[in-house]
Image (tube, rainbow, N blue to C red; front, side, top):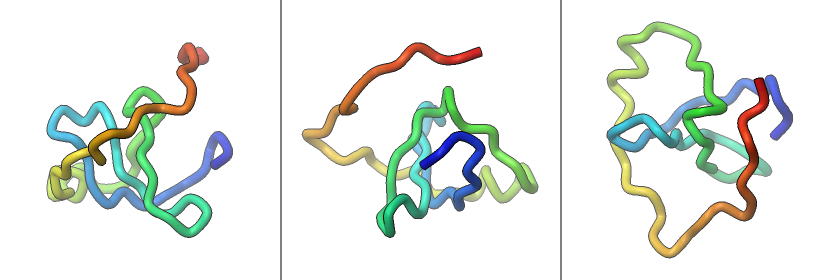
Length: 67
C-alpha cells in the first residue's frame, strides 16, 4: 500500500506495535505501529481484538523510519 493509504484496522498486538489491517491486494496484512496514525474514535481502537501474529513469518525487509 502507498503512504497515506487509509485502511480499516481489524486487530492489533497487545502492545500495539503491529496492527492488522484490511485489505492490501484483497488480503489482511500487518503494518508496523511505527507507520500507523489511527483516526476515528479512540474507543473504537480500544475495542479492536488483540490477535496473535502469524507464526513463522518475518518482515521481507526492514527500513529506517522516515521523519
